[in-house]
Length: 423
Image (tube, rainbow, N blue to C red; front, side, top):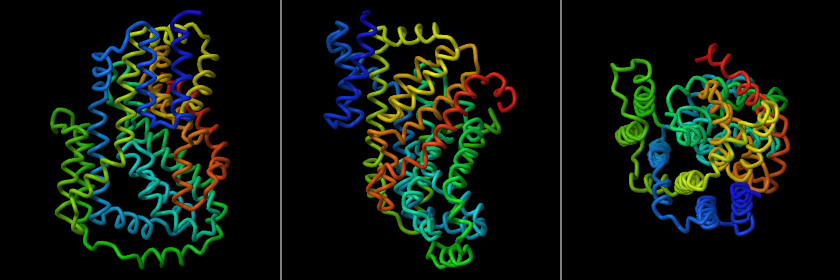
């Protein structure tokens, strides 16, 4: 048995045991796994590589922190409530439109921050009472919140799994927005309709809309200025390349946060910054640890070993491996799946369109969010709607998840053709 194969087994077993049995945070589990691998490979504890790896995703960490603070700021000043109110009142008059708008609202925080937890705990909590008024079972509402939050996590502008895969092969996070929209929006909306339309079509929509209208929200259109400004700073540099300066995402969210201080309700800036940082720090820790793990995989030759063996597999077996292993590993950590499996796997597709391939892999890995033993998104959604058995939330999502994985595999297989049509 080669040392690389031993290291692969050690990596998978050590990470699983540390996370599931020892119940250590995912970031710490990844870091300890990287150190164990280095020691077994005869590298000792290579401090330089451990630190250097952590800095591989420092730019993504800055995006996450600034985005989460922005979310907390617009939550405090009332923009999030006002946006939910206005969208529901203006576009939620039919069951189909209500479910579509609810999906988009739930997705929003995840799309901005790259963390599904952000959606479940903010807009998911906002929308869940409205869905419950349609006489949906708690498990169905939890499944809708979990599904929309996961699709939001891989929607633009912030898709961390793609950033991780791209960082592993030095591919910039550029040109992904449209393909990610095409992948996520239809699947997210169709999943919500599949789960909830049977209940929504029987609901009294006029009564629900009248209850939404009675909600107290901030007055005036100035409340939307931070959101509009943030959208302009994201879109304009891509729409007018070379003519409009690109502030990049961290500065964009900082500008949006500062602007939100001058409209809407008064904001406790220190509280918003503290709460936002605390909520996202676990994800940031995972990212830094993933950078270290990839560095150690490279140092020990494991990354090359996985890439070479992936290249030797027939296309059908390679696609089957991706369809099975990435969601399974995503059940422990979607980001871990993207780094440990996504980075080596994508090296087998260098002849294809890597933007489409990386986007599809992020979709496949994200379906692991519902996989036991962790199923974190389903667990948190259950806590929000008061359903203690998270498996009741997971079961309705099995079929939509299988469909999403099949879509992801087809996108990888036909990535060149898809790119000609979409990109």
